[in-house]
Length: 166
Image (tube, rainbow, N blue to C red; front, side, top):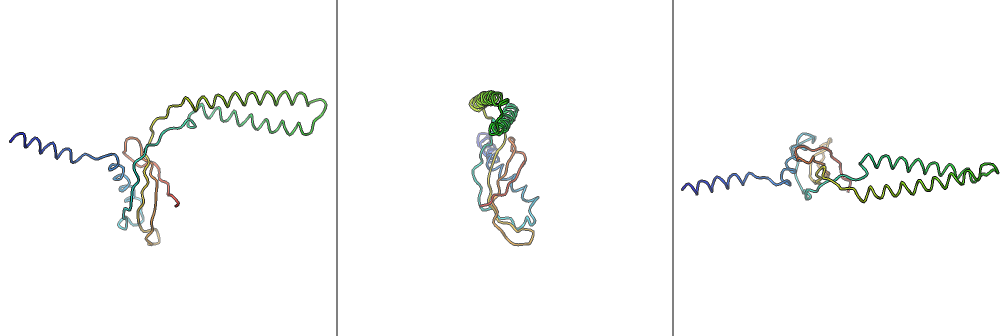
């Protein structure tokens, strides 16, 4: 008898377990309930599978430094090449040397950027899920909406919402 009660207790405890997908869907429903014009008109159509969002090398401070340096060099190259089109005997050699130096610097920075990209290890920083639903808009017309939701890594809140235009 004790084993049967223990088994029933374990089964009931396990039945309350929610998957990450179910938690995300619940968060979205709560979010929509608080933001829709007419929450009672809400009707779920579909959810995509929960997907992980990961950091990119373009979000690092190193990338920002390299990118601004490369942009600066490319801007300088454009300026110097304009000067070459209107040469004078005095500055043509100096400009050609400066262009060569800028090209070398640009290649070096491009190499550093490639190394940063190749060595970067992405980490999960959020979850994404798309949801299609019907709800009334501000004018009372029922519409079909597809929205992409960004959810924090702990699956505790919706951090960003983007309406998808089909």
